[in-house]
Length: 319
Image 1 (cartoon, one colour):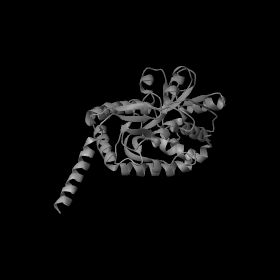
Image 2 (cartoon, rainbow, N blue to C red):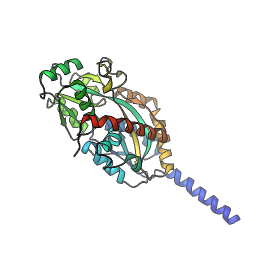
Image 3 (tube, rainbow, N blue to C red):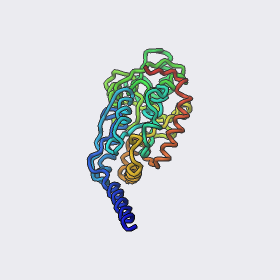
Image 4 (tube, rainbow, N blue to C red):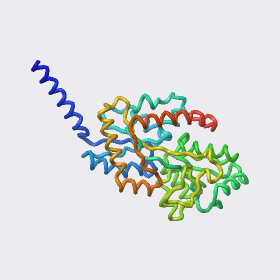
């Protein structure tokens, strides 16, 4: 009996020590787009905070290409030990598998949600030379010049592309899609005048909009952006069906131990409630929001059901 009790005590102590040890080395966080993309900017705000609270570096591993598919594939194949994580948005773990008919991967089976970090809208940002001040102006110009205007995104099948095609269908316009390797490249294209417009998350565009290098004419969110209060929502512009809110969150490979998932969730929730993090996220035009792994998983299931109805109507095909 004494030996049994001793064994149980030793086993319990070993489990506790194991739980407290994580992480014992730097953690790699795969980012599905290039440096300067919205999700990259948001991760680099919280990575130093995770280092401060967990004692190990959380290092960005940017994997652009394929509208995030290359990063998703790499993250799904990683060892489930807590040392390779994935920061992703709704586009990578909802829209992409729907577009591929679940032949690519099944997010509910291959990933364990850790927790959401924020939500935010997409925006339409134009090169200042384009004679457009509003969505109404854009539609009118596109109808006068069918097939002559274009919009850039971070790749075929990403959420920005889906919003562009939803807008095209709702307005009956022919605005040509120009895909780039990542969101940062798409933003650079409109800054350099290579494209007329970019559909993007807010973070990489705030400073350029303030400097007059791009003209933001509409946001896809439910509310106006505090740092760009003059920009109307899609609903205010007359297109409520084009409302799109993007979530961003942290994931691990599916078989990652629950104790690691729970530890990471606690740290993410704490970080997202820090006043300076909340302020910096707000300055980037997004709302810091955190939740439990279970709540995040339910949110993903709900979005999957919604987009399974929307995507076929856009006619987007991914080879």
